[in-house]
Each structure stands twice: as C-alpha cells, then as structure tokens.
Length: 67
Image 1 (cartoon, helix red, strand yellow):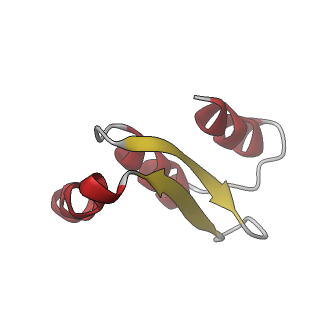
Image 2: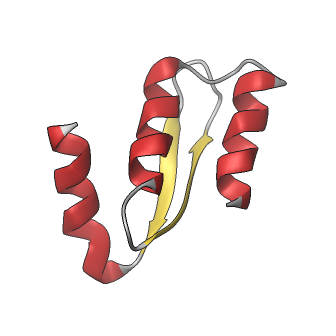
C-alpha cells in the first residue's frame, strides 16, 4: 500500500508521473500476488517497478496485456 501512496505523491505533489504510468501501477496493484507497484526513474515517462510473487508473474503480464 505504501508504494501506491508513493506513486500518488509523485503524481500529485511533484507532477512527475503521467497517465500511462499511473495506469500501469493501478493495473498491477489489482492483481492478487502483487506486493506493490510504483513509478521510478526520472519521471515524465519513466517506468514502473512491481514487486510480484513468482507464481503471479504470468497473471500480472496477462492482466496488463488485456486491459
């Protein structure tokens, strides 16, 4: 949960996120087996990092692909 809050802070307080990164964090966070997801890098088109249980990796990939 703290990673989601951290992404919200990046988005709202520092305005360094973008809609695509926010969507990736949101999608990953909805999958069972994801411990956290957040934006990282320089912002303005950075990337996301998600901590995922090994057994949930394929589920996360598939979920993001279909959404």
